[in-house]
Length: 110
Image (cartoon, rainbow, N blue to C red):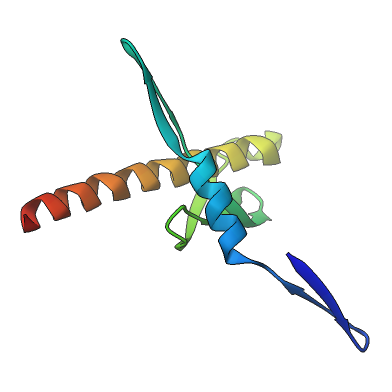
């Protein structure tokens, strides 16, 4: 990220290459004998809380911008961290579904 001051205005220039490299570094699958582990990287762009809902905007490893929504059912005990975790789980679920769809689509083309 680069910051430039032009007059009274501060302009922030994000370098998408850095984000892409970091997300690729965070996303990997490893195996060790009978065990396997998957790690997934997402960049949180924006989180909007509108009690009892949260909207999460994120960027995936492919550079696509996506949004997911989550709802806290216990409004009296609204916890921002828990509802954010719920939204993140939905984001990871979407990414796994997208990989399945992508792999199935490319298999049919062969």
